[in-house]
Image (cartoon, rainbow, N blue to C red; front, side, top):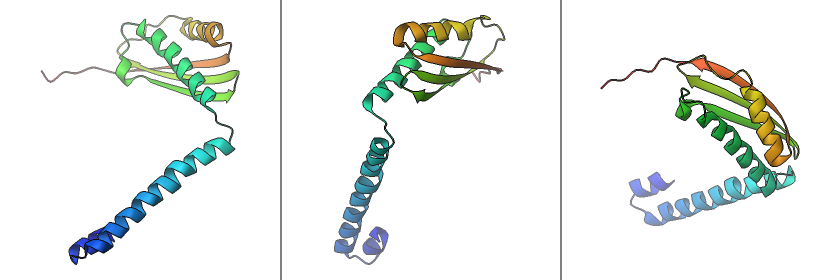
Length: 132
């Protein structure tokens, strides 16, 4: 309707359609998402815990010098407030990572948060090319 109002030169139609669009986005998307989070039991502490778990995993990744960090992926699934599944996909140009790397991350998570975690690491070697 915004485009139709502009095409016909009727700015009141365009303005009303734009207001309706903004109200719909705010009411349905933002407030609806917040309501679903509330009803499903998601609280700020869950987001904070997920953030802490991600920081622990990413700090451990930084210790592996040959892994390309900006294309590695850390997926975290909170089972409840004291259990998490962490799936890490390492994309780099080496097959050499410490044999106990997953246990190291698991131990750090347990020490820092008290969470029990299942850490899975997938190594996905990739070749790096430069056009320079």
